[in-house]
Length: 386
Image 1: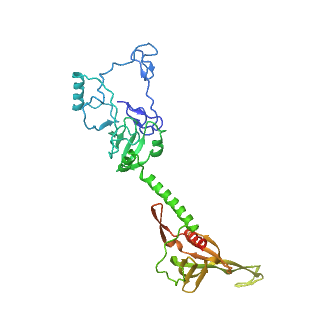
Image 2: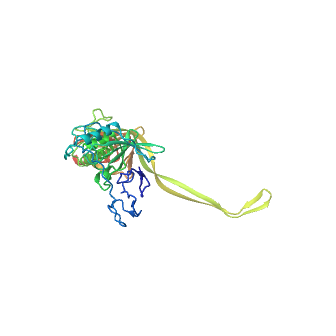
Image 3: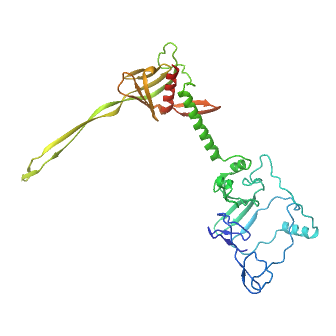
């Protein structure tokens, strides 16, 4: 048996292969020499273009069609790539040939009916959903490859441990190849895909997109005051009449801008040496002082949000902010910045993202970090409800 070498990737392929099992490129077969004049002719030529002799060999007896074969389990086909000697036919193949010679039957076209239900992907090719996959083994010099191949669409799945790599297909422009080509999935995933499902990676992306959409929907509803956070039964403050607390976050740091002065200076001028170890400096020292604001930690405590107030309770300082006096709220990943009436300096509350929030929307439940964006939406929603 002669191997066909792919001109694109150099992979050795069986003689009967039409496409490369590594890259999917169409294989070009070598020209056939004329037995009479030795002129090279195309491999599909029927007559020699030099002497006109027939190049068609005598056809062997036609094998029985799939409709007339005796039902039996598929055998594993083994191809020896390094050997040119064809393997001897098995006893079962010899019996099949004897049956063909003695009892010829009429060939009937039988339509293949794909399996239904929860059959394994080996019984239903995930690429075409038409034929089952045939196990084959390719033995090389240093390694052996176990594959599953579809005789209808040419899909090739190579075994990679407990997973299978989708390696090749006849039509590399198909949507299935663009979607799953060169991907290594488990047998459970390939079975799910064969029956119209998706891979674990696709499912994770869909779940992630759904979670992001739910988050946007929830934050917008919270910002507009259309939904509220679950009230807290035992808040760390004394509530006023008709007041209820919905957020209580511990370990929050209160930060404010403080003026810090930095002084910089240096010496400039000549130095005159009088004697060994004795010298005079005739220069001067110049200094420059600058003042700028820097965020400093003021206190650490608990931040509470009610339907009327935003309260910070610390060991050194307690801040009680009426929601109606808040001018603006700026959201950060780990906290918020609040500006209010009669207060020149902005108050920063950080460490909010150390806590989590569980919410439900559209029948789905999510647990996410309590970011500054959620805190801002909750505060603005409460202000709109006043």
